[in-house]
Amino acid sequence: MNRDELRALQAPLKQRYRESPDAASITLKAEGELGEGVACRVDTGRALVEAGLHPGTGGTGLQLCSGDMLLQALVACAGVTLSAVATSMGIVLRGGRLKAEGDLDFRGTLGIDKSASVGFRSIRLEFTLDTDASAEERSKLIELTERYCVVLQTLRASPVTEVTVR
Image (tube, rainbow, N blue to C red):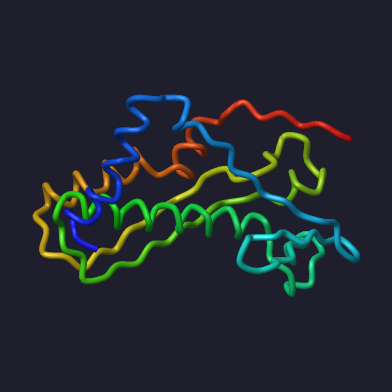
């Protein structure tokens, strides 16, 4: 896809959202079902994924760790966003790799140490790009990718989250 094709694809959507801001508001959903043992099956819309305990908390390693899935979602979102932004800017990417790493302390997760955090203490996202873009263009590309990556902005902004039991 080139810049003009992307713009043509997005132009009617942008116009619709300008005219009817409420049309731009959607609700994404994820669903899962409790599985055998300590597991949860998550329907991705493409395949059924079974999440379980990380081996560091007693898991077998045969199921996906939800922490890994969060990092995978970050890489996926950042990669798609980067590609769209590069296309929009007219930057040719011959290839690239993204890597997300996150630091956890399982003492918090396992309730061993109340002062240890539950969840990621830090997350690092790294881009390695194969492009002839100038340093200034690469910098702008990453700046805009960060700005428009839904998963990254969600992690940074900590949205209001409600939990209910039915």
